[in-house]
Length: 343
Image (cartoon, rainbow, N blue to C red; front, side):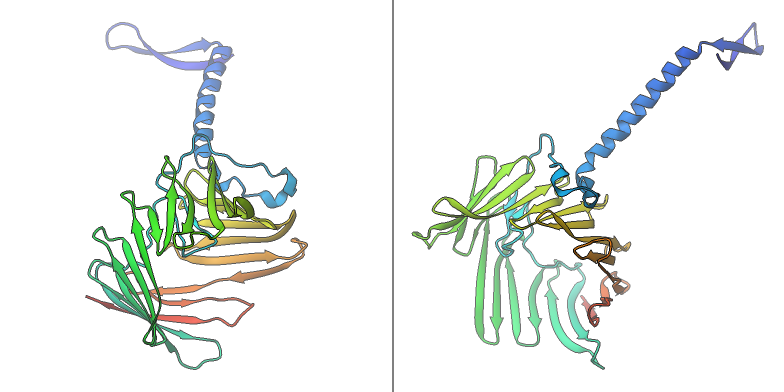
């Protein structure tokens, strides 16, 4: 039996503390019901984010025992492709093709570098920004320039790279009303009735037998390179509910990723075939910069090679980066210095 102290009123302005015996079974049931509600709430909250850490401990499992993660009722909203990156082509949401965007007061960034065997820093590049924060020009090494143009909605429309006086390329970007890329130069992208990219091909190569096809299974995306309709290569990407890439699968390797609540990658586990190859962990500063990266590599992961990178950052009063240094035992560190000019 459990006992509960309860106050009751007997007559005017008189309170008496009386002791009531309460059936233990009823009280226990109430406790269990409360705990069940709490546990269900917590479990549901965790399941909402479980995709980001679904593969967190895969290195502890045999490759063949790793279960495929699938999201329920998953739907991509206005996904697109990035044809500048021919590996991570698929973009799970509208993608901003614009280059680095500065604050609306940032006018110019001049970067210098200094390697471990150098006594003085050397000029590296300059980035120029308009009053809206959009980058309109980059100059590298004094003779390589890249120019950026934008449409009326502020989306990147042209990217022109010039080496000395020669134009190396001129990429043109065109978008639909959902800001999905529909053409990149002469390459046209096709979308299905659900607004997902399903194929792309150079429109000038009429008789060219190759094309890229994209297929979907919940949050898993399969990209095939096809010749006359037959697959000759593939890549598979699986995403969490938060649209973070949690699994990559290729013909000879598989990579798993995990993320924190800020959608920052905190761990990567890579297999070659069915053998564990590498584990990487990542830590971040309050500014969101990588604070520490640790890699463990080797056929036997427990006795393999461990490397650690602890970068250093400095910022100005406006919060823009003024210094970066990568610290690694593998290679001589390179220091980056940034001089920021403001409107």
